[in-house]
Image (tube, rainbow over all chains, first blue to last red; front, side, top):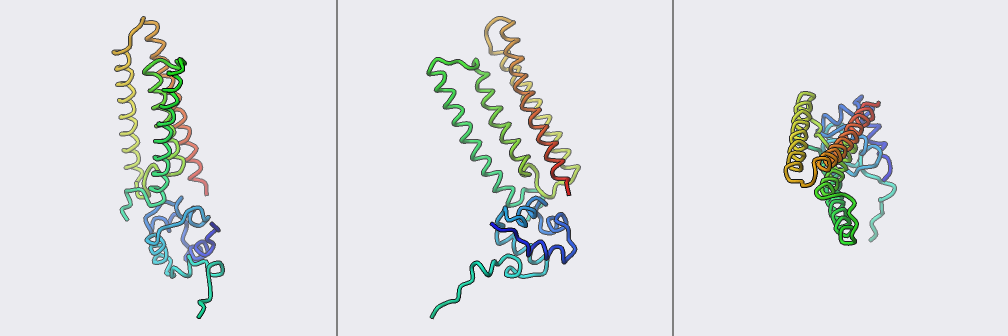
Length: 74
Length: 145
């Protein structure tokens, strides 16, 4: 799994530390570190909580567009 | 999400470690049975079972502390202190009960019983030292910015 730099950038833009974001969504700091480093794949529930805290959408934070995007045929 | 409980990553990791510990206990007990069947007495009963128990539970505790799945995200310092104190008290109680039970049930001369008791104490102290070392290393690692 690749690093989630979008989450890291969004967190920095909101001037939040990993600890502050972790407290806001009710997880440990180690969990946020693991998500940012791509070591842990969060559940949709946690993804939504992170998105609500950072004021962004799931697409903006977690969608890996270039890799998975396919043009529908027909 | 209830902050006093483990978060989803912690639960996932702890479950994985728990399953692996169960397999470890099963393998160690089977190996012990096999060795005894072959006539190899590597440690007298019940010390062999105590050793297997301590290795398995010790490795479980060490691993969940190492991966940060021992306490949940919302535990305050006071609650953590209370939990640790309670855990230490229970551990001491279990250790005393085990030694008392062992001395009450074991046969042989006083010298043999004393040797066994020291072995028992040695295993317990070794596991305790490993767990404490991991706690200290983990605290240092987690406080690093």
